[in-house]
Length: 564
Image (cartoon, rainbow, N blue to C red; front, side):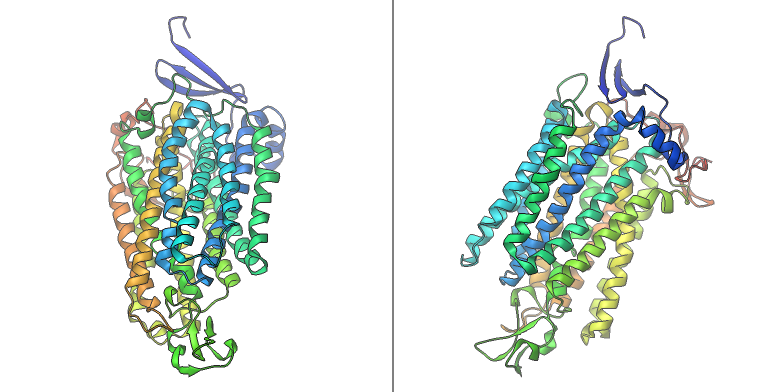
């Protein structure tokens, strides 16, 4: 390094982020081995010595982020299942979550800017405080309010929850790149997959805890979640992080940095992310729990006289006025399984946990053996098209299968469980690949800004899917009267169809990304060839045209070169 070179160096643990005439590289004070290639004893020795300081930001932020995630999952089930028992329709509940998603979209923009300017620590702390505010406001939700008042109040409370989630998520996602050297793309993929998978598994725990605690007490459920933030996540963040982690090194970030419009690969990936997550939320977030809670249509109405709730079908109640079996929530539709709140929460939690575990092991069990680690745009297009299959099958089956038309409870449960398990696995692989590609394409000196822009699209996709699902589920099915409500099976089938269309759109958009380096391997086969040198020159906006071109190993460390 000569004295004429313009250089800026910032220490992160034992690593230095070095700027040299616009080129960024990560230099470690020790050689940074791929931890997958060492045994547990060697890894423990290294992490107890030199590398522990460099990984400390990852450990601290991950711990706070994962604890927060439990409360985020619980927030969704507590609000949704409490609203269902208070007879809010699927569309009304979707509206309650609208500002949660919309605020998340704008928060990602502001968080990307704030993280680049002031570092990740204050951003995460503010996010945790907003989560406390959200739960505090839900204490004030009065069951005697008119529906309009309750919807407005809960929507505002959820808005603060959306802000909290995306402020905190920015830190959890960004720190993976800050502690990973530029030439360690396989290790980066593993770290991203690990943190993303653990996050979703713990969010599943939150889904279950929220539903289980709700059967005990609404107030107790809120109080326990606040305790997790106050007693663990907040102290860990305040006392465990340095203030300058994640700050832009050469200049203050600007709004143009947040939008990163000069990074075409990140822009196309962000748009694809919007439709990818809409493909899930068109049926998962609101319609699925409503459908699982709803009773069978065939056992409701004036033909079914009762004296007690036990005289009625699963999920139905005995109407005190009419003396007939009725839907607990006619606005939630009928035709479903009639499950209890705890079972609904367990079902959703199992999906989220499975989804998270598959994310964690995607490099080792899926893309690694197939020679697709580290992945590129071809990998995502392949898995994006596979993502369409489970929802397409369910849309067709729910429309035409006698199992659903005759409301055979066991058969319906079998179809739903098997198809959703398959979708969870495929969607987890897609999400894991996406989470890696965003940090690969992000410029190192403004990674917080780049990730913020990308997750803005994630939030908009969730908003699109959530609101769209509320309209579809509420209005598509035939209305069977005041005691039953609309046909939830028809609404659920159309939600699956909408998710399928969204998956196809996401895969088609991904084809526009200029990232053909390495081609696509499908095990021993080459499904798509490499374009050669051309893609090595692609610029991500700050000279970040590639990440780890020399490290084309599979997740098992066996040296599979995807460019062969």
